[in-house]
Length: 131
Image (cartoon, rainbow, N blue to C red; front, side):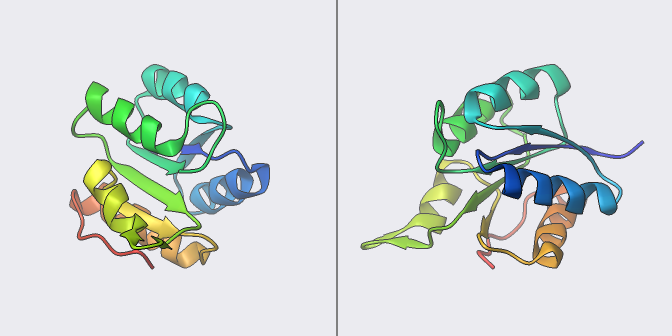
């Protein structure tokens, strides 16, 4: 049985791209269009990994990460964002401190996505890298 991954992103293009990439690599994927729906699906499916965008309507990715961490401190979470720095704030470091195990900067190469997913599901906690 393949590992289940929950993909949360308000962009249907990104959601479908990530889903296709994951299923092509043998993972099972379920998707949500925002954090509110993502939390509901997470509670139902208890996936092995959550991949969430940060900037979304309804419930953003930061709130989503914090809620999943509250419900399951050991959950594996990969945050996706188009931001690396916001002024003097290192956005990637901030996401790590808020509970993301790793961060994927958009746009991304599918091979980079799969490498991060593989590391998270196979090695447990990973050293943060924003590639």
